[in-house]
Amino acid sequence: MNVLAWVHREMADIEASVRLGLEGVRQGQEAKSPEPGMYSRLHLAGQYVALNELRLAEEQLSEAQRKLDENLHFKWRIAIRLDEEFASYWLATRRSEKSRRACRLRARTGEPHTVAQAYRLGALAYG
Image 1 (cartoon, one colour):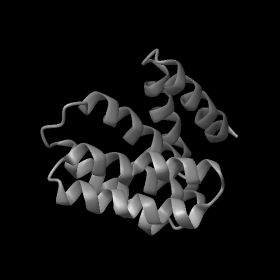
Image 2: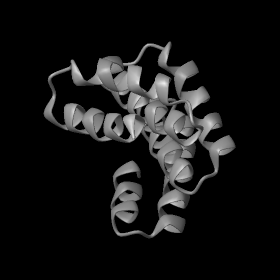
Image 3: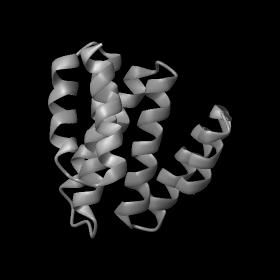
């Protein structure tokens, strides 16, 4: 479900993207599998930041942070995405120092997509 939500996000169909993201969270809860729900929550947080629905973004990020402590198979990968979404959220809430710090940490991972995202967000944080 998360991939479909992402595809709709890329096509600028925000309404469908958010609906599919919420469905992904629900399916993850029903399956009692934390990973799918986590990725859907991270996707939703990014969508809510883009829509300037910062309270909803914070709710998704807070729940994702809480669930990160569960026994996740790909915890390190989810932590990277969580930091990226927090960096975007902190930029939107004008907490650029927190965003810059998160970007510096993410740039050290060496993974190309993550490094590119960190530099993009860092450029915005430094304005």
